[in-house]
Every structure is written in structure tokens, then in C-alpha cells.
Length: 365
Image (tube, rainbow, N blue to C red; front, side, top):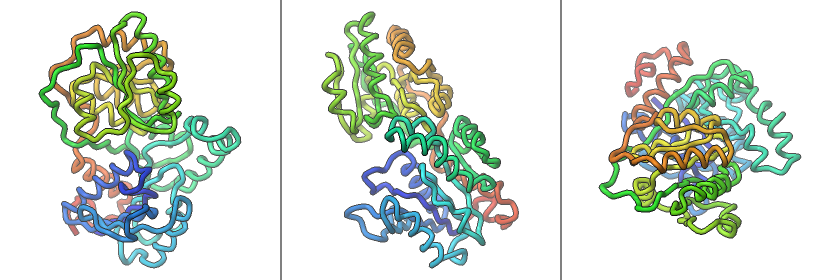
């Protein structure tokens, strides 16, 4: 099978995140099964217009905004004769493939919606337009297109916008084993994420200040970087340590040493850090918001109302318990399982277009 994925970024892009990891790992799993996979995305500084990464052909055209126009041009140049399936990976602004892709089945992959995030990341006039008109108008093009998403929360949000064919597929995670290291002697809270307004790291620090009233020797580790870092460092109380960006080995070590992970995002598609922490034997306390509620429930963590006071009360309770000696599995599954689930959902969503048994079974074609 020949698969084309459209995603405005790839892993080489400086703004790459969890959605790009998802796309790349699924693509690699398909390549391992004998499929031909092309990823179309925007230009990344210092990278060639075309290259092969782990067997995935990467085609880069256009910039942050022109990549959508270039995607249409690329499709006109190649078209249905070169591909058997198109995956439209939507990251806020979609490629609008239902308006120009024809002749092959097309499926949209939407991890999450912006909705409330508009208020945190955009000035008020833009946020108003985005929240109440732009996002709804964009997604209207996908009303009758098969759509895949990674949580029940995101499925419900998409249905609220009028999309009528939305299927939940699993989130993926690398195989993780807890390293043989001890917990910190001091009660330790961990925040992992981009230091941006929609992740609300300031809420994590505000909750930590309240925790100190009953657990005075507690400490908070903040892992990640972003536009709020300078402001947060300036206002953080004693006991808060900023690590910046760290590699995966370091991140897992910190997760294994901490006693609890705090998750304060406005919303997520899923919340993979919850699964990673669970694999290290570290429970999560998260805000009861879309995406986070799905991953925290699946990993047997605790959900609280989205405010620092409720978060502090729950964190204090967790810090008073003996932490687990080994990790456990959350709701995410292996990448080969995710790749199989995505392909099966695509086939079930397009029974006529993917009538070939090889396409429906996932067997190489």
C-alpha cells in the first residue's frame, strides 16, 4: 500500500511536538510492514527538500502558511495514481483535503481542538474569531469525512462541531521500563511540558505554594522550556527547580525519582506524559479537562477541578502515600498496535474505497 500523510510539521521542525511523534512512529510501523509512506510537510531550516527518515519519504514544501497551498500543488502533480490512502493530520489549521483529494480514500487525524486554547495563545480579537468562527468553519469541510482522534473527549468535541463520522484510535508510547533508582528523599512534584500559557505551569507553581503549607519540605521540578520560563523563574518560591529541556533518558529518570506528576493543561488530545509517568511508577494528578481526563483515568491517577486549590489538596494527599515500587501501563499502546488500529479504522470508514482485502486486513500490498 502507498500512503500519503499531510502534516504541517515533521520531527525535524523546531516546533514539532507530540502530534509529529505520533505521525512519524505510525509511519515507521507501516514501513516495517512493507508499505510505502510519504510525509508531506513544511520546510525545516537546515533540512533538504526531500529525504528518507527511518524508511519514510519526507517531502518538504512551503512555510508555516504556504504549506497548505503547496499540498494542493503536490497532489495535482502526483494524484491518485501514486497513492492508495491519504491521511490528513490536522493541527489547528487543516489542509482541507476533502476539497481537493479525490480518487482515493482520505481520512483526517485530529488529536485535539483548540477551543479554549484560543484564549490562552492569541490576542482577544483573534481568539474571538478563532474560537467562535474560524475553527468551526475549517472543520465544517470534514463534516462527512472519516475522522480519527485519540480520546473520547476529543471525539465528543468534534461531534459538537457537527462531524458525524469520528472514531477513537489509541495513543502510542515507546516501551518503557522503570530504571532501578530510588525516589527522592524530599516529597517531589514534577511538571513536564512546554512552558506556555495553555499548559498552565503557573497553576502548578501556585498549587505547590499551597502544598508547602502542610508539606514544608516538598519540592517542585519543572521540566520543559517556553515563553513563560523567565516569568516563572522570577516568581517561583524556594523549592522550585527548572531543568529546561531534557533528553528522554533524563526525563524518565526524573519521573522515576518524583512522587507525583502534575498536569494542568487547558486541554490535550490525550496527555502522553501521564502514561510515561505511570510506566515509571509515578501517579498523576490532572485537571479534569478534555484529553487529560482520558489519560489520567486510564492510568489510575486522580482528577481534580481545574484550579490550584483543588490541585494542592490532591497533591498533598498523594505525597502522604508510599509510592509504587514498579511501573504500570496506562491507556497508550505500542506503536505497531496504533498503526494497525489507524489502518483498520481507515478501512472500516471507507468500506467501498478500500474493498481490496489486502488494504482492509493491513497486509502489505
